[in-house]
Image (cartoon, rainbow, N blue to C red; front, side):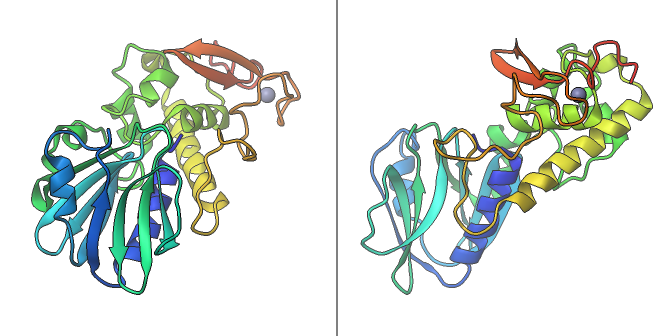
Length: 272
Ligand SMILES: [Zn+2]
C-alpha cells in the first residue's frame, strides 16, 4: 500500500511526465475514484501543469488555468506512463499528452480518489487541511514530532499512523521507524523521553529516505504485490530472526493492523 515514499516518487514521475508539455485532454470512465459531478470536471482538465505538490499521501496538481486536482492512491493506485494505444489494466483515468504518451491512473482495488477543485483551494479541502505535519514537506524534528504525536492516548504505532497527527506514515513505515528507534509499538506516546523522541525522529527520516532511495525508475512496486521483494527491516518479517540481535520477530494486532517488532530490541519497558 502506498505510503509517503511511494506517493513522493509518484509526484516526481508526474512532474517529469506532465511538465514537458500540455495535457491535450483527459479521459476517464465513471468509477468510484470520482464522486458526484467530478467525473465531468475531470474531463474538462487540460493544458499546462504548473505545479505538483504532495502532503502526506495526497498529491496536489495545479494546472496553469487555475484548476486543480487532488489525488490519493488508496490501496493499489498508481500512475503509469504508456504509449498511446497500450492497454493498461484497471486504468480509471488518463492524461493524454503530446507526443503519443498517456499517463494512466490505474487502480485495481478502487480505493484511490481523484477530486477536482480550484488550484488555490486544494489545501483547504478537508482531506488536506486536517493533515498533521508532513515529515519531508514541513521537516520533522524531535520537538515537532513530540508536539504532533506526544499528546495521543493511543499506542505509539497507532498514533504515528494517525494522519491528523503526522501525515504520510502507514503500517510499513510506522513499524520500520519504531524498529530503527528501538521503541516498542505499544508504548504510550506520553511516556517517551527526549532521547527517545530524537531516536524516533531519526528512525522516521531514515525509514522514509531508505524507501525513497530503494526504488529506481518509473515503475513503482508495492511490497504487498505478488512477486515483490520485501526490502524492509522488520515489516512482514514475523518468524524470521531480527537482523540486529537474532531474536525471533514477533507480530501483534494494533488498530486492526498487523505490527511486526523485535521483543528484544524494542522492549516494552523502554529501557534500551
Ligand atoms: Zn532485535
